[in-house]
Length: 269
Ligand code: OMP
Image (cartoon, helix red, strand yellow):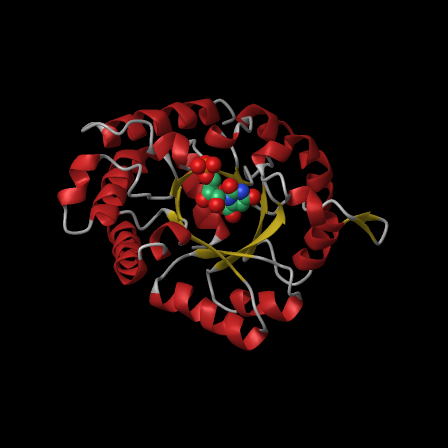
């Protein structure tokens, strides 16, 4: 998907919500467990119920890989279902990959060619040759971790280096490896106070922002300095939407929750 197509969809829907698909058999409604593929069925119903209110889906591969071969099948089926039924939604494989170039190329092939994801999350720790293979595919994106939402983000990302904090070095350097058409950055919603600094380094890049909902980040705070003329934000919420209820009406409840978040976003258009 191109940047223009993504922006068009965001402006048409007046939403920049990304629904995170983090399926956990311990948390999904019990009645789904009698299905042949409960994980897929859960995701399918969540996708159908929330698609009108979001512009992106982000399956986190850990929640599928945890179930071995059947989990991988559920992931493939979920992605295929989204691609077939909601081709305008931006599909992010949240896999946080990155390895020596030769290996990254195979990760890129796996997620872009085999699974047809639009984007993959990438850890920048191994440097340029580990990121470049993800930038070689037309209309595909690498979403590189810059300042993450978790507590441990301060262990490395806030260390001083070259006169500024490491995450700023990551933003500056990685931005020079790609373009605003194939690179995004992850910045946690829990780090809203840092968005002003971040926008001074990457004024136009799209930012994937997880951490609203279950992790307590504020949508309004993120928007204050994060929004650009092209919106420039994809705000992810996973648990707060997909586990809004675990009754028979779980999908409906997820839809209502997604609609609520999208409603909060619509005031920015
Ligand atoms: P909730 O906290 O349930 O909304 O889920 C957040 C999702 O975003 C999970 O899939 C996380 O793995 C992911 N995530 C973060 O929570 N923090 C980050 O800094 C980066 C990510 C991510 O790359 O998506």
